[in-house]
Length: 211
Length: 211
DNA sequence: TCTTTTACTAGAATATTATTCTAATAGCGT
DNA sequence: ACGCTATTAGAATAATATTCTAGTAAAAGA
Image 1 (cartoon, chains in turn red, orange, green, cyan):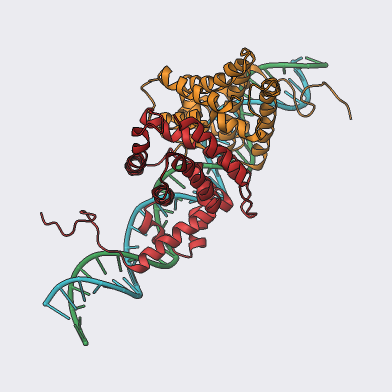
Image 2: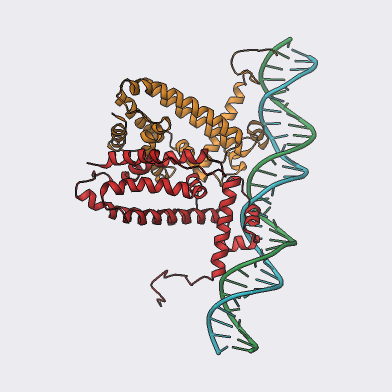
């Protein structure tokens, strides 16, 4: 067996620029449809029209309607995760980090309303393969976040808790709050979440996590 | 205009027992399908087979596939809300009430795994009419809960906060935790959530709400 | 530069699924 | 028993997703 490169050991090969563009435009079109028409109501033709391409292309790139939905979801999660990690790396106290998570969650949701809304709308129901990918992404993400928080736990600034409770305890409330905010928001008008509200959730998270 | 009775002013008339039974059996069948096959994958024929009835019946009672989904959702929400209110009425301190919300959320989810999973899976995307009904139900529910909590806020045992933040702050974390628990749970094996875990979330909620 | 190969696009043909429609049946009040 | 309405049934139709075949364009090889 020959190893060609150290990245993407299997089946990879730089895709053409046009290909990337087409995929992106399809995903963007699908998101617009999901946002404006509703997910279940959106048909392949709707996406086709919005992305201005043929059915052939859609199926060539994504295999099925579900495939488009999965890709969009995974894409969104990765954007979110990357942003969160970037933000956390710039925090250097326990308090700033915990509050940083809440603030980032809130700000990102407002900045990416349509995508955030889509990410909230569904999480089950994907193919086994997609669920696997998501599990891996989640595991990696949790590991990275954990690494950034470990020192504060070790130094006694943050409570020691079961690993799988940090995310719910820190971001559960803001997550639930933004979910309601999103479902009240109609597509067009861009309102935002008042800063004192955001800070209330940030403060509460810290109240729970501090020792 | 003639008013016939003080309940359900329009269009009501006691439905036959058989009708109720059929509707219930269709909803139960649909839930089994959603749980075992996945929501999007489930077809009308699947539900038909599971509920052992004709297409005609399905459409007579619910109008569309979406109609079935909406009814099941609303039904589930109402069961949940009623249970929560019942439970809260039996709590008579601020602490017991706040913790009671968390405990009920947790226990109900474990006891009604399939339904809980369905309720988590979707909330947008319903028809305008269903969304309206849901909004009303939610408003009533919030009002009832608020009534039960108001005395503790007034007496100074609980923090005074914006009305729409109580639910996220109290149940956001357990909600997020159970969501993950549900998505890890495959249909069959009935595991449960360890009591200390539940109490951790109950305690955290109280820590945030107490003055 | 020409040739070969592969990725991509297109859209008609097909398969699957949701919904409508017409007729038949069963319960219920009078 | 009679008539009324709610309910059931399933064939007919409509809407939608997916497959397939053929053509095009871009990269790789000579």
